[in-house]
Amino acid sequence: MFLPEPNAAPAAELCGLGEMVMLINEVQIEIPKATLEAWQEIVDILAEIVEIPAALIMRLSDPDIAVFVSSNGEDNPYHPGDKEKLYGSGLYCETVIKTQDKLLVPDALEDVNWKNNPDVELNMISYLGFPILLPDGKPFGTICVLDNKRNEYSENTEKLMLKFRSLIESHLEIIYMNQNLGDKNKRLTDYLMELQALRGLIPICANCKSIRDEQNIWHPIEHYLIRHPEADFSHSICPKCMEKLYPQINNGS
Image (cartoon, rainbow, N blue to C red; front, side, top):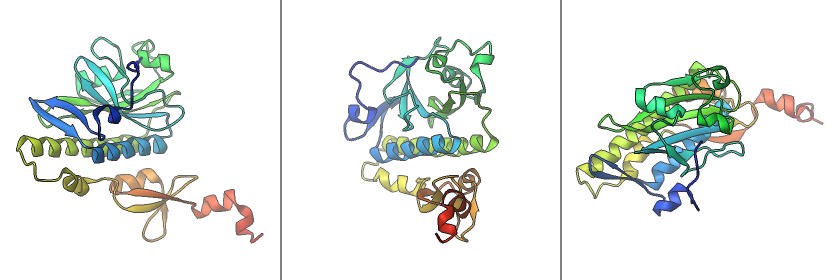
């Protein structure tokens, strides 16, 4: 189980000005506030699309692993700053870090290898996670989703998570190269704007989560995001949901 640090504040507050710090090959990397905000959007979108309680970006801080960014939601038991010893813990993320590969656990309660893992104590019985690597190939952490019920997760969910994983690794590479080369005059936000995967405003149905394209056609959100990772959202109501939820409007009453 992930344990909050005593008197723990949100991770962004702990480092001041929204910056978090880690070490890579003796080069100090600062993760700027703009990047953290983009990563927060990533986990929030994942949690909403997959309809699960928790979407996380985990950070390895040897010998611990910590919740780096956590989706917002009442049923999410994980909070930024929560941490646990990684090696020998039995956590899902331990296997992802060790193997540097995908891990899918549809139902830990029915799996002898996972039924006693610490996350089960938080009622997180299903898991899908991928490793996040630093530019030198070493592990930064994981991107993962967890559910309190059995979940096989769809192929589109995996594709979307891999898209977001690539974006996160691109951010890390740019930040690392920028600082390693000593280019202090180049604004990191300029780079981030070029790679911002959530740029542009598009309408999303508040009920079924379909997305309207430029031709006024509504598409399932998973299909749209895989093809358009640059999207940000505004809420609307698609015609089908309008008819279902507000029939009096369609009837003119």
